Image 1 (tube, rainbow, N blue to C red):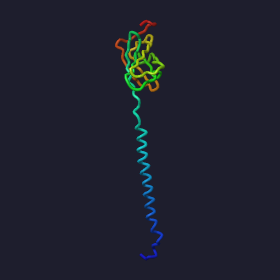
Image 2 (spheres, rainbow, N blue to C red):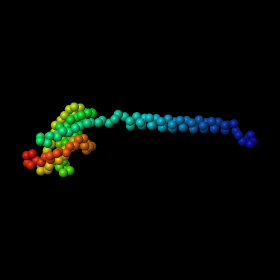
Image 3 (tube, rainbow, N blue to C red):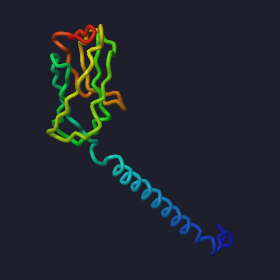
Image 4 (tube, rainbow, N blue to C red):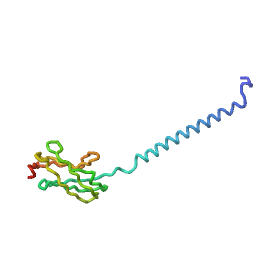
Length: 148
C-alpha cells in the first residue's frame, strides 16, 4: 500500500476504542455482579416469623384453649376460633385483644351454632384465612336453645 493511505492520526483510534470498550465491559460487569449481590441480600434476609399454636378443645365446656408452643409473640386479635357444622361455618369467635407469647395460653368460649351440630373447630389467622390448628369433635355438640 502506498504510504499516503495511512495517516499518523489514525493510529490512535484503535487504542482509544479498545480502552472505551474495556471500560464499558467493566462497568456492565460490575453492575451485574453488584445487582446479584445486593439483590440476594434483600431477598435472603431473615426467615419469616413462625408461630406454633396448639388448640385443646373441651367440648363439654364449649371452650378451646390455645397454647403458644414456640416462635414470635402473636397478637390474639388476628386469630379466630371458627366452628363448622357439616362443612359450613356456624360461628366465628375472636380469640382476644392481647399478645400471646411462648408458653402462654388463652381460653376462648365458642358458640355451638344453635341447631347445628358443631363437628370441627379451627383456629384461623383472620387476615390471611390460614388455618393454624384444627380439630374434629369426636362427639358433635348440638345446642338446642342454650342447652348443650
